[in-house]
Image (spheres, rainbow over the protein chains, first blue to last red):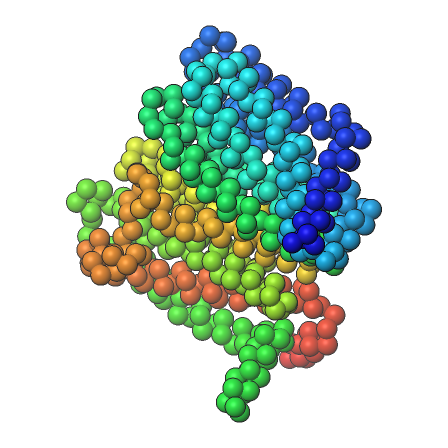
Length: 225
Length: 258
């Protein structure tokens, strides 16, 4: 067991250490998130009740776009300095190491977005209960997002002319999460039961956590060979 | 034991690029030859012979294009994902070509299904588009196809690109049952299964004088897709194997006869 967890923990720790050496890089998605979410009220007049209706969509899409900025960098540095090959040559199974990497990136990129979500939700006019549902939805949805983004990063790291392909690959796969996340908040705002969409988000998370590391490891192997 | 090995030899030959090229060269004209009459008779039956619907009048006749296109959009994705799995497990060049060749076909049929659906929706629902489960998931399918096409073009090396597309196709295949069952799992404006479900196969939700042209165009479209797919795979093989001896021999043979 230690043979599996040891390398995974070492990789996890490495990601956090690397991020600690360049803190500004990891604050950028959070700042982008805040700016995007706060631009919307400027486009509509601030007292407009329509803002409350759009708030969950604004917060979710803002989180998606902010996370996508960071995901681009996930494997590129490792490919360039040879760490990626070492990762695939390790005795520990590659999907486990890839999952550890995704988990570290979730902690660094997505968790700040989740923690900022209540503040943004309140600023966009949501009531306390919908704000709680929004945050819980993001807590369940952002790991799915990081794992999907990581999978797309694994696909595009081997591509020489990827361009804007990574967001194009991630966003269609994330539509169910956005639909359920927004649906939960709307249900909570209308006083209806909101548990079902949250359970669906949890189901998507279970699917992502188990399936995507395998696919991502396969794609990385393809990129390196 | 000898039966087993002859079958394996045949399969190995079929899976080799020159073997498959010969097979496709022989089969494709027949597929076209059956598909075109099926489509012609089905189109004639659908446009002129089938009676007008009591509610929709003649507007329903777009079903003879819309349903085959939609069925193909899902079927092609499933075939693409299956070819992708084969390409990844057995590293077959042919399977890789099949994945890459299927993506633009699937995208075209998905776009056709969406466009014909929109044209059908305006007179019957009053709207070109609604964000219900069936339409949204079909649109996501289109984006998945476009992602596969884009990913293949982003790679400089053909084999690595095709394998990356195979991984993407496998992950995206989750969407196919979602599209198919969207009308069952959610309250959808789009009608339920007319013929392509277990219940509907026994008791079709369409009268038989409207059904027969639909079956003809459905089979016609599928055979047409099969013929085009074979041709596209042949092209893909030629593009990748251009310097191989079997290709130059083929070229010499065809140049010699002219």
